[in-house]
Length: 284
Ligand code: DHB
Ligand code: FE
Image 1 (cartoon, helix red, strand yellow):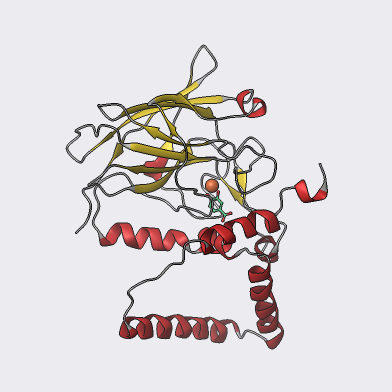
Image 2 (cartoon, helix red, strand yellow):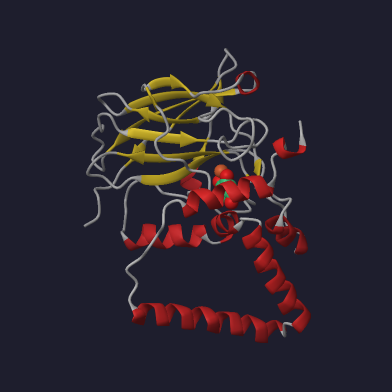
């Protein structure tokens, strides 16, 4: 493996930054709302500085670190690990959704993954196929339990080495990514690599940040999902695994009890689990 083919924070960070930059974003925030948010934010920073009597050295280290995160292309990584869970929680509550709980998107979603039939195996390489496999099945329904025909279950997950396709070198483009199209009753059954715990890229400034306070960069094993159907609120969520490491100590604080699976291992060696997704109607 040559150096430029070694996955690194720099590599996956800049790939995540390039992807994010490719869709220029905007919001309709008023000046009044912006003023209120910025005032509270800066007052909060001021409170922390006063409480801890932050020194000039610490302030300068902070400025240097901000520069490093930007130059390393790690802002999407950093924000999604340490901030997104608050945004996700507030937005779920604001709409008073009753369906399946969401979780953070993270930096590695790619839209338009190739469509796969309702009963399918995720695109995998030999080394992923020879690791333990999970058969993940379920139904996509509305709030009344009616199956949503042809619902889309987009799934993406890290490989056995902990890397996401399109964000690390030498992985086939759509490895462990796909848009599963549910059948006429909203049912699906997906065979995939049984996910393993994942370390966020930690060889750059985000890793330096974590090390500076004696933390760890691990996320529990997870599947990323975006479940959607026309006329319904598409949910971005993640599913986790009972008894897995870091389930109570996720660096990204994105685990919810409702999203923890409890697969059973069959005589054939396959782990099986069922999980149904319930979609709210689209908010006004
Ligand atoms: C990050 C990576 C993930 O796979 C995830 O689920 C959340 C965050 C990250 O590196 O920022
Ligand atoms: Fe992830």
